[in-house]
Length: 269
Image (cartoon, rainbow, N blue to C red; front, side, top):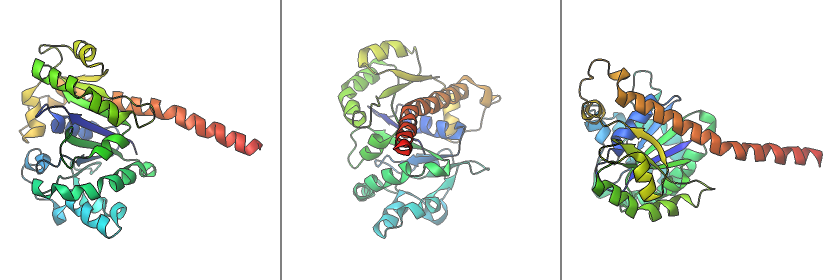
């Protein structure tokens, strides 16, 4: 199971909308995790139009399961389908931000569960919220195969991203040569991804179109406009998903080659 984590340097650059969009267009079964402890579920309230999850599914259910040693078994029970085929699912955020301290006990174990589920053919997309938030999912960011900072292109957003470069480096340097990357929302409005990459020193993973109407479909559950699936907004999400999936494959390839080499040497011995 690949783990892809999205975070931000400042408020409301579109992390949740981007994470949800990636989950919905992801080429494999995907599990979206609302891991931002600062508020309740934006996806239940927005995209799912106020849906009440069955059995009260949420991160809180995973905390309770972890306390009795049943974290891995509880994953399915704490999910909500995002589509009719149930290929893309959601673990909603905590019901209330006041509960955030209880998450500190589960992040490490949850990172282990996510990274140990390769055989299930499901990828995890983590909405980690703002970087540095108290009780935030720092362990999930460290465990991720891809860790991306979502940013808009106005000067305050670029300045905030620049200020978080060291924090991003600290999270990714511990994970076998990974580097933090950017998902740029609204390329060229006014600054381009190339300009932001030059200022921050972080490479651009993919650009994402600025499309408030299209984004409202995901963030507010708005009615899809005509030809929404063919819009630049959705095409950019599909392109970003493809780039991220290929990035994971490329980074894992040397590891797989090393395993084969080691097995060959063992056999010859």
